[in-house]
Length: 172
Image (cartoon, rainbow, N blue to C red):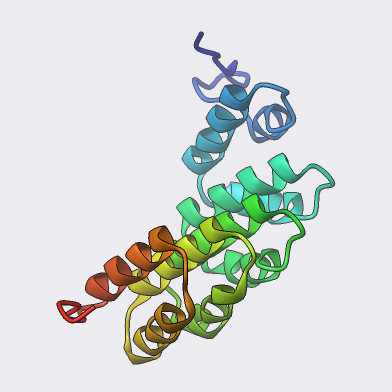
């Protein structure tokens, strides 16, 4: 079943308040559609998404982090960095992904430390983001992560990220 978000007055797109309220909907599809709506709003949605990163509901924090990454606004950098320490692995995963989408080389060291995260999907996301950002520091972080990683799926993500960063991984 497809859910639709009603538009704001005089517009064919929903208003920011409506989109935010839909992030709290019990249905996953409604929350996903609301997140995409926030991305469609663009820059005016950034402050609201930043504020939502501290909501008590992890699902709201997850979608806010996702929107911030897709919005690609530099103002999201520090809040996404803070979300790397979220108690919920889903939020950490999306924060790591968002930092990769922002492409700020300043996030490399922070993403590199995610190699120690207890959740393999967070480690995969951090590796992919390091590969996207690229550069010598990212490659070093990926090589270090590869040395200590024991989960095959994460190792494969790290090797792919090294390739994305321009490293010949034929020897791995």
